[in-house]
Image 1 (cartoon, rainbow, N blue to C red):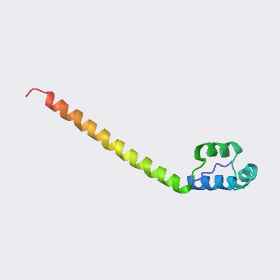
Image 2 (image 1 turned 120 degrees about the vertical axis):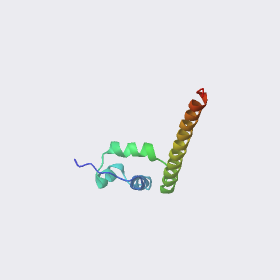
Image 3 (image 1 turned 45 degrees about the vertical axis):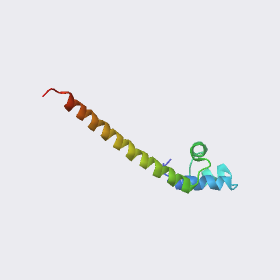
Image 4 (image 1 turned 90 degrees about the vertical axis):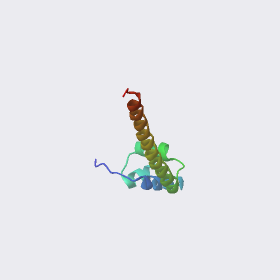
Amino acid sequence: MERKRYSEEQIIRVLEEERAGAKVMDLCRKYGMSDATFYNWKSKYSGMTVSDLRRLKALEEENRKLKRIVADQALDIAALKEINSKNW
């Protein structure tokens, strides 16, 4: 079976269809996925809206940038300590 990739916005829209009353088996047939995939999506994205997802992605990106800054500063501090510890 051909594997399809769905964006997270598409996944949330599928879950919204289920919340609106569509049957899981009908959705699985319509979008060409297994019911296990649907329930995995439901456990991961339940209760989220598209705007929540975008906000989460923005926060994850900001967190990644901040972690990189902290790592760079830690390397700089370690290098400066190494230079200062040597006897000239």
